[in-house]
Structures are given as structure tokens and as C-alpha cells.
Image 1 (cartoon, rainbow, N blue to C red):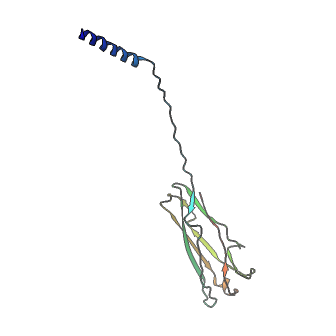
Image 2 (cartoon, helix red, strand yellow):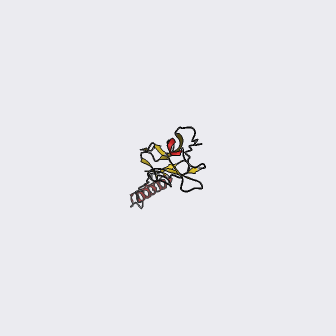
Image 3 (cartoon, rainbow, N blue to C red):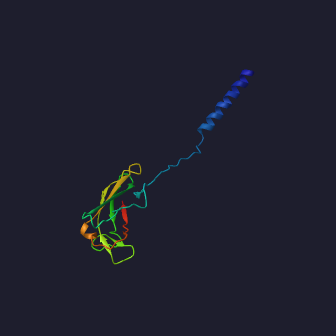
Length: 157
């Protein structure tokens, strides 16, 4: 009798398993698409930089060179260009204005390098070399005092 009951129980268990696995599935699937977009951008590492010509001595008889630098980075693979606005007092070229006599100016040459390239990401900043020169004749008869200009440099993808 025990064997008979075990056979019936085993048969019932097997039948239940067949019914459960043979029934319709209630599961469903969904395909998730994941996207992103890396923006091509360029950023200077500092908001300001300086090109200082130092003391312009009219008795020197020499041109006055100046140099400075700053750095920037652009998104990897993005082509960039460097431009400048010519300065606040640009009139046929950049020039500095006297601090108190707004009719006095000293022209100067400005060079930026590199002017173009391809970014390699923030881990590989690019040094922008800033050089300038003032011809002796352009400051030899200038009014004594401080002169200044503000040039906006732009790096753009």
C-alpha cells in the first residue's frame, strides 16, 4: 500500500510539473538602447594671461620683446582654432593706451602659436605661446607712464 501511495504521489508531482512547464509563459522582454554624446569643447586652464614688455627705456635704442603663455585643452579629436580680437585700441594693429592721457598710444606686434590643431582631451593640454614686440621708433618719443591694452583670445572647436 505504501508503494501504491508513493506511486500516486510521484505521478501527481510529475503531472503538476508538466502542467506548470507546459503552460503559457507570462514573461516579456524589452530592448534598452543606451546613448550618449561627448560634446566637442575647448577650455583655457586660466581665465587670464599676461604679455609684459617691461620697462621701455627710450635711451636703449632697442626693440622691446615680450613673452608669455597660457594653456588650453580641447575634446579629443576636435579641431580647434585660436583667434584674438585685436585689443581694445586696435587701429591698424594692436596698441596700448596711456593710463591717463587717452590720446597717447604705443603700437605692438602680437603673435600667438599654435593657431590651429586637434585636441587630445583634458589630460593633454596645449601651451599657447604669446609673443610680442615693440619697435624702438614706436616708443622712443612716447609720454612717460603706464600703457596697457586688453586682448581677448578665443579657442574654438
